[in-house]
Length: 288
Length: 350
Image (cartoon, rainbow over all chains, first blue to last red; front, side, top):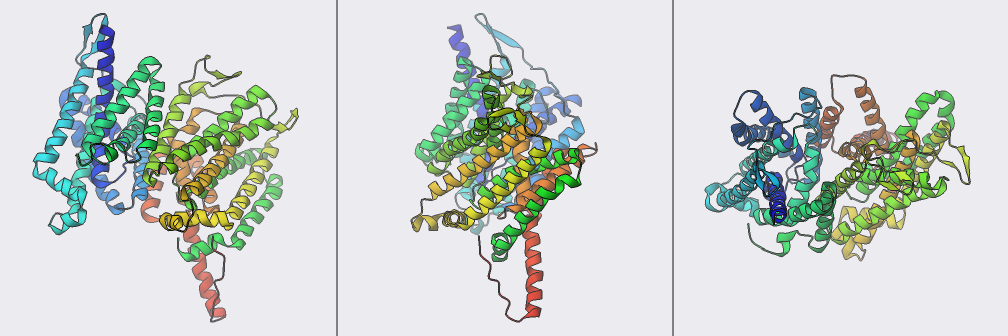
């Protein structure tokens, strides 16, 4: 019974962490059809922003929930202006340029902070289920993922900003004709996506430690989740995270974490062969 | 691809020129430089073959594979594992081509027959590479072995037996022989690909790259042609991996890594898409540059490579060789126009 509870928490955690690391990418890809290969580095910058804020004596929670998204969001705005904006509509070139940015960011951070892992101790301690001990922080990650999904849905459905974003996503020319500048929408969208990635990096920093190359560990999972999700941003994100997260954690529980990731990828390839448009390309059509 | 580039890249003159230069280097270079430099040049050549494999599937097949390093790494690991088990290097050599080709065939089947778009293709190949990296990286313990060959995990496989004459395991390849073999095979691969591109199958592959829908409406099965090109690219990358394992007698998971995959893309982008010699030029330039960066501390290699990639995508998207070819073509046309009024540009397109 205790074991079942632990496994359930681990599966939920696996799903939640996929939602968190993929949210920023899903927003940018879903809205702008820009594949941001520097996504992993945005996470990494979020981790370093948290670390930097901590070193300045800022409270850990402010560092994670305010400093990390803010810093990475700003970096996103700058990069969008300098690079991404020039390549709209050229998907392949955008991928290549963001890959270049990814290397560049790793290079810069390595030059500044050195190629070492900096740890942030996991806050909140543990609690016990039977003879097992569970980190409270794990539960926090699950809660944040739920809040994130609900908030994203609320923003997209209920606010003016969400309406404009959805309109631009569906038909940029029409939105343009109605007096909304797609350029501005894209700029804001990219900043929001970058900020979400920053938040994810900050949240994961206490669990994984911070190192310039940490982005590579997340990028594959994030991409598979977003692509497996398909055209509907939110439903796809949650659906694919649930599917892949559960497979990953159960396989990891039965074998080793590495084989959990292999199982995730294998499931993704099989699924994309059956559903090339992703989960929401076949099911839940027309959802958000 | 503009017509002048196509003419330059597809002309028999340029192919013949490249092959002649290659043969001259093959015969002349060993007597001009010392063994140490020759070994350095050899690794450039091995990597050039890897660059050519991507240059072919991307520039002519229109398939952007972010995971060419996966086939390269598989080739190196296959050779290493097989040669440790078998002893004689003939079968491992062939396996190091066949296994990556088979892997490319399966992966390509999923991608092309699933009709996944270019962008998904890039992401999936990248993901596969990363997963392979994680997988091999985690096999460090003594319990991970295939036959008698331990996989070594992040430590890699050291002391890989070199190639030998078929049947005679004592007659192993020398550094000079390695140079001859690498350059010889590079010339063979280059010439073979040029012939393929000029053939009917090659024309269809290029046609699919230019306009997949139109090629399909004309009755060509785009999926099968792309799968063929992709598998061939995987085989060539595997061959390069086998040579790499021989060059250093060592292979480690970093050759599956993100940095390696990025480098291959950068070689091709810098050298130029739509040519086969471009990737070679880009590869040698960038390799030389990374070696130079390695000797100083101011700039990190990632930083420089990333900046080069961003700048080339933004400012020189066609790469050095096509841009230079364009320039040459224009100068040539101007001279020809001065010489006689009706300049003929009658060169065969690839």
